[in-house]
Length: 240
Image 1 (tube, helix red, strand yellow):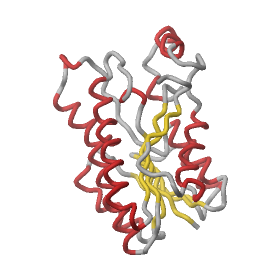
Image 2 (tube, rainbow, N blue to C red):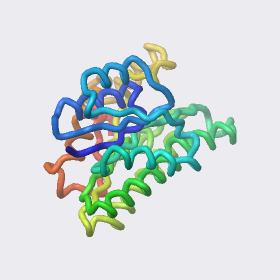
Image 3 (tube, rainbow, N blue to C red):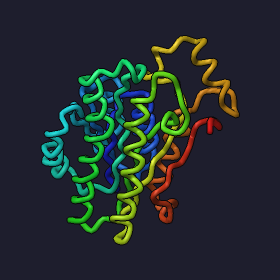
């Protein structure tokens, strides 16, 4: 069985990624998020031997190493999906240092450190693994109030490309999936009018499907994508 770490497994996209992976008997999932909820309870009942949840706040980047003490008790790691994100939306002229630091810890620093320890586990166990970072369309096209959030995603895309060069020679792959706007908790603050304006900017004139994004993540983790690394795959209803 191939064990995959998925951060933010209690959210809309994260839970869909976990659901898609667990539908295949190939994968086991170790979910990481701040707390459990009805979604994690459901996964535990349906997949008691293939789903484990670790309660951890990714704002605590300095304690990332402690998670892997628990993970090593489960199994060697085949894949990592850095999905968890914190959105601090505001104009650059209103930048708040405390909020910025939190966002960079959750969106950039913790994913980098999770990648560090996942690769170390892969090296120890001689695993040709796959890392998938969930980016955002905002890193490629401007949205008012999202410049700072976009910068955290742009940073992780650059990191992913570098990692693909560093470790591709031994079969470890690193890619990004770049979703458009989805109907998730992160978009709940937007009004229907704001959402409609955003969706009209896309070729398909609709929101991005979370299942479509999750299926793309699954593909990049699989052997079907064995020759794909260092890429940013857009799943955004044709925004770019």
